[in-house]
Length: 499
Image 1 (tube, rainbow, N blue to C red):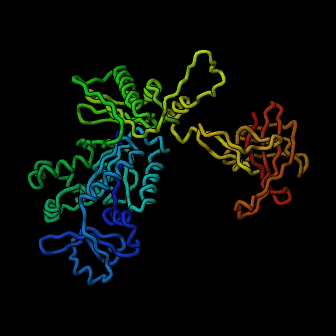
Image 2: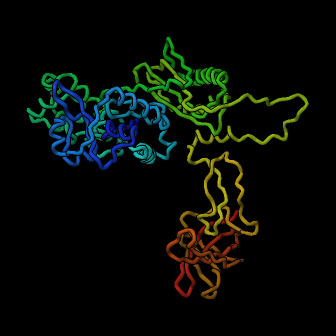
Image 3: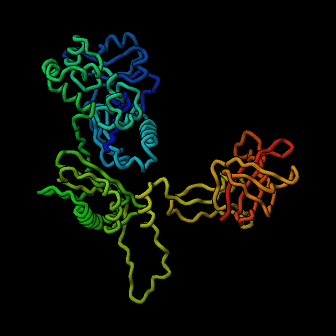
């Protein structure tokens, strides 16, 4: 299913100026101006300028009368367009299909890549954070179709429109959300048509006669009744390999064969440049202008075309060929230097070479997502939840380690789960306990090991845990704790179990 992000840059012209010159401060009103005849009018205003009442189209003389220390810079539409394209190229890190939407937006087709970021919500939050951390005010929406995402990002609150709820999300928005000309919108207002839902409820033929075919097309695009393509931009410096077909293809075997050949061609080109692939995008274009995109990454630079093609094997089954595919493009959007390496020398055994896990990591990453493939490194702490940190799967070995005498379970429960216990004496370890509706009888117990809050790491509340290692009649071994001394009414929790 198609899912599209519309990124709306609320004050792109003024944000661009501040990013470029570092001035004026954000609390100072800033506007860009253009000339219409002999008049100078505000073309765009920053948020500070809007707060004091300056709006687009206002005469500069009037604005200066309202704000004497107003910062004024001539508008530069060409520069804004070029910068918007650069920003779109930077956002290719989120999806292979990214395109500028002048003058103040960017399209991102995230179908097939959202799982790499932990889902749509996580992707949207990360996208907004990354853009705003660069000094750009932004709002974004995700919807099934570009028109709905555009409308909600600009005339709604932004956010995620659930699949299949496009009509509900758009109907209540004003007709300006349909990307219509000012004249068309004015005509609709004169006739009392204020909302998209009103326009959609009108008979189609009279509506087209009154407002034109453009209104009908934009309405269909916003409601998802007409397909709106997004032409992905490909950076000029990117290495690509593509194949256009005289006759459309659709068989899975043909797709895999083409991908293998394109990967081989690409790796030959990268070999001439001394580079290897770190991120590879596959863009599929169908005869009906609909398309699909897939993305894979590698843990380290590689030119193994067989390995790269295999990374797409499982994902390519999700591509719907429709009435046929007319073009396939393979784009290396991220590359790293990779020199030639001699791997075989006569008379020298290769047994001592370290095992290369990069291909295994790549295949796992392609299957379950980058965030789920990692290693754990030791951390100097006795609090179980802090004793590890996530590092890259291929990161070099950590220099720190846990004490060999420190016994810890092979699996921790996060969060700990409450258990019911029975003890011979109040301050003794449990003689039996109930966990997940199953009663366990304890045969051996070892403890307590007291772990307290670490004030030197910022723990504001003081707490105490008394941990016990238990072995049951079935031979299972558990790690439980009491969250306070028995005299203070401590409760028991299951925190992990041993292999």
